[in-house]
Length: 180
Image 1 (cartoon, rainbow, N blue to C red):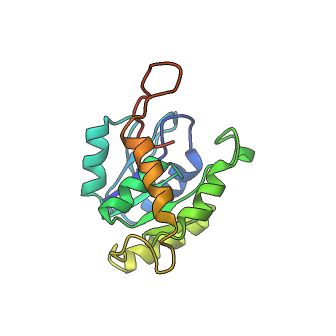
Image 2: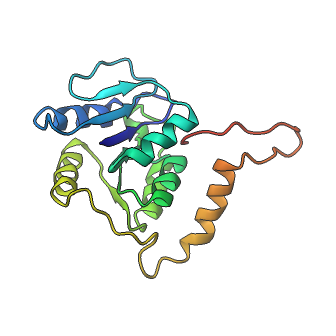
Image 3: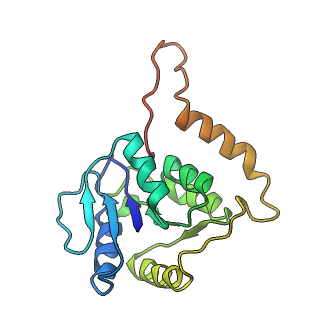
């Protein structure tokens, strides 16, 4: 099963349409997508708008491949589970986000051994075909050789995303999110 997630903030139909068009010619490949705020319907992939954190993690564990926007919760969870991950960053110029911070995120996260970055539907199709041809296998190492410098960054982000830090001055706790 391929699990896709686009987060919950804004629609990311470009990624979902790319998956749906790829799945049209591969009826034997089951794709489940957390479609977030999308209002579109998709004929070749199963969609759900939101998942609880437990259901989200269960889908990640079940998946042989994860396809996602560049949300840190998804990236960290997939890395921890050793899942191959295809990232397509949201782009401000397409109205998919307020800015292009996901471009910066994928530039750094592409160093992880389980991460591949694509920019459009055509590249997504090519990477899905390549991943399927490899039998969904991904290297089992967390970080490519020479990228140990990412470990402190990943630990800080992991702590922030999963342990819901205390907000200074407000006394409130941030709500846990599946991805940014």
